Structure formats: structure tokens, C-alpha cells
Length: 252
Length: 206
Image (tube, rainbow over all chains, first blue to last red; front, side, top):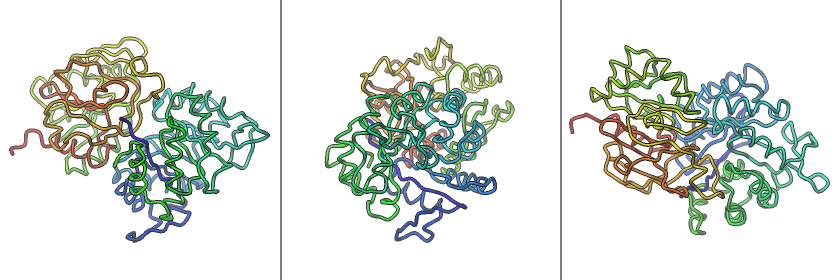
């Protein structure tokens, strides 16, 4: 049976992982290569690298880092941040990314998902959507969650999947950073609408939140989080053992 | 030397890195002479079957593959590269494959319960069906990373491992010196590396 995946997300700026990390046994806690290796050796099923730099020069540095990670870590790598064109896909794919996640780039240019899927295959294109409730409706937000696009989220996600997105990351702005659990209502709605793997993001505060996620929304494929893993609040191997004890299939 | 056949399909960076990690001398190449001189061949691939087989035929490298296989050189197809080894695929039309292993490539969607997502994406457990040299370090039950929407419907004679996803998904195949993995060994952690290592060790004296 296919397993539920646990995915840590690393934000990279100027060649370093930002959002402080707190691990023992790591000489350099902000080295993307060391952190990626740590996670890969300690139960992570996949890694997401988010490029939060803006300039061209820094972007080159990011691809260098990516190449180094990909030459040493042999689990799937997804890259997001600053993906606006097919050239951006090409740049990260030739540097070792397996999947590319698009967010604002797809909002600005709705044909990007379809064009990329046609060129690189559906499995390569991940739609990442920042979603927030506005007046009782789910809206897609752009620019890192700062700008309400007014677009209704479920139909937007469905449209992107129809044009070729092979996977969807749903980040709930309402629950993000609150650490009181994933947005189960929003995630259920997305899972009902699409037939590709859906990754939950935003709100995990404890391992119990992951158990509740996979129990309540059985169609969810993966849970993604950043700070609770980086700060060592939840240790991935321990989390997976707890999930297994609760009857959830994981890779141990 | 292992030649990773480059015919313009997919990203070969991780595959080359993973072979280096198991100590293999691997080159990514589309050069017929280099491929002809290789001890082992890997046929990679992502994307759509029709496009890939067209590119392979246009490159003329299919003829070299046939010749090398005939001479006993081990060949391993990975993901779409495995699917290309078969007779025929029904992905967006009908396309003839290399015919090195008998069987067809068919849509997962039509064979599995509708609540299961397609692509079959993620880590799934291997169930070993038959002894095969590339599985010599695999006991069964280990997880490997799959990403695909079509799969091989193949005679039991050739299936050496499978994974359960609504149906028995063909995971590994072998026909003499021709091997295939539907999953990505280069993305499957230590288990994947052990399969690549076993492939690299083919023909070594024990």
C-alpha cells in the first residue's frame, strides 16, 4: 500500500536555510546540504526547497545549492519560489529538482501549468495554493499570502489540475503559524474536488495534528511543515512511529 | 563503464549522481560510439511514451540498444524507460515499444478503484515475486518511490517485484539481460541505491 508522506519544507535565502533551526549533532544548522541529509537520514519522505531570494545573482546561488543537495540526497526534491516561466522550470529541473511548485506564477499566467505539464509531464508540476476564508468563501491569495486575488480556491485548484498539475499543496493561511492543527475543512473540500495527490500545509503544532489529519481526511497524501521540524518540536521518525501505531501506513 | 542513454528525455542529474554514490563509472551520453563501448546500459525517461519512443528512434540509438542486448549487455529501463522496453503502449493512442519484454503499457485509471489518485505517486512497498539479480539486496516490504500514471500489464514470467495500488502494479521486470524498474531507484533512498548497486555488480565474479 502507498504510504502517507511527511515532508519538511526549507526556506533558502543567500544559500542558507532561514527560519532558525535547532538540532543537535549538526555542525552547521543553516547549511541546506547538511539539513537535507539530516532529514533524509531521519525519516523525511521528500523535501521541499523554497527559494525566497529575489535577485538574479542569489537565484544562481540557489541553483548551485540545489545541485549540491541533489548530488547527495536520493529522495524526491520539490523546488518552489520564483517560478514564473518555463525557463524557471528548466533552470531548477536541470539542477536536480524532481518537481516544481508554482504559486503566484500560475496566478499571473494561468497557462503556465498547462505548458509546463505538456513539456515536463504532469508528475513534475505541483500547484501550490495559499488559501484563506473571505466572507465564508475560500479565496486564493498571491504574493506569499499578502494579496487577495478574489479567485474562488476550489474551482481554481480544479482548473489547474485539469490543465495538468499532478499534485497540489494547499496551505491554509487561516491555520498557518497558529499550531492548532491543519485546516481539515478546507483540505476535505480540495480532496473531494480533485483526483491527484493533495499535500496539507499550515497549522501543524504536534504529532497528534498529523494523526488527526490522516484519520479525518483519509485522501490526503502528505503532511508538510517547517518550523515544528526545524525546532525539533516534532521528530519525524517518532511522528511516523506514532502514525503507524494509529493504523496509518508510513515508510519506516 | 555504464552509459545512461541521453535521447533528450528527462533530467538525468540525479541518476548520474546516484550511480556515482554507489561507486559506478557512469556517463550520460547520446553518443553512439560511447554507448557501443559501454558494459551496461541504463535507459531512463519521464514524460509521455509516444514522444519518448519517437525521440529514441529518431536518435537511432534504438538500433544500438538492440545490438547490445543481443550481445548480452545488461540493460535497465527506469520508469518510462522501463515502459519503452515493452511491445506496446496505450498512452494517448497506440505506440509500438522496443519489444524486448512481452506486455502492454496500460492506464492505471481504468484498472484501479476511482477513489485512488492518479498518478500513483509516493512510497510503496515492494513485494518480491521472483528472484532477480538486481533485487539481491531486497528482502521484500521495502519502500521505493513511484510516480506514474500508466503501468505494465505483463506475463508473470517477467515480473520480479510488484507493489499494491488497487491492482498489483508491476514494479520490477526481467527478461534475461533486460531489466526494468517502474519506480525511481535514484529517488528511493538506500533501498534504491542497493538496486543500482546490484545492477552495477552484474557480471562481477563473486
